Image 1 (cartoon, one colour):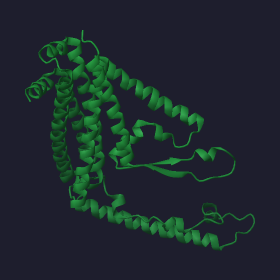
Image 2 (cartoon, rainbow, N blue to C red; image 1 turned 45 degrees about the vertical axis):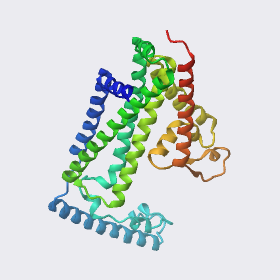
Image 3 (cartoon, rainbow, N blue to C red; image 1 turned 180 degrees about the vertical axis):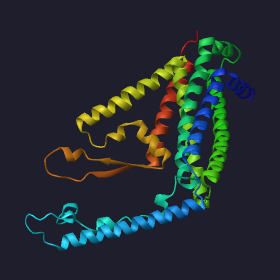
Length: 337
């Protein structure tokens, strides 16, 4: 426990950690500012104006429908010019005009509804926390290698496994604490925004769903912190983890996507880690595969396929176990100089 307390104090005393904390806060503040500026809570005058506009649109739509029906029922004479026939040629389905009638909501100013926008904004928080966790985790152990702090620590605690696990545990506790605090602040901010720029109403089910999204977001941040820590410990400097992250994005995310697209491979998203991250945050993700539509001139219909949250969790756990096991084994076996 003494080691964990000391490591926690060292984690939050580091300048990089403080800069990262402020950076996340500034990004969240920027998002909140944009929401405040671009949304407006409808007033009674707005609702009345929207109702009048919707009624006018309905009248115009009905008139267009009647014009379409008349154009379809007439047989134009050769050489005659008929604007209705030009606008609605023979065979045109007039019901398309009335399939999607306008409502008052279509003419109201943009407003922020917490129930609708909250899940996506908490996923955005999860992405920021994941970046924070990865960067702080990598620098936390990487800076110790660069400064020689690991060597000094091992002189006092020669058993390497507890040292490695103790530093990782302290990191995860710190990231978890930051995630919880920022989640509470983010929810309070969104509630204030919704109350002043839209609707803050949430049912019990919507609130529970929002909480589950937040749990997934914080879990992603913990996984990212562990991976950053493990890779940095393996390479013995922060640059190793940051370089590995950049290489992964360039080679495996961008490069693989391009190559699979040129090969017209089936379901290319299954080979991309970002697809599983998306599936985890959204509790399953659907993708459209139209690879078979390029094999011949005949028309075909693509297929939808899905990556479940369970599949993404399995991929994440596998990646986590492999990276941490290799890193811990290397930490125990390699000489410390």
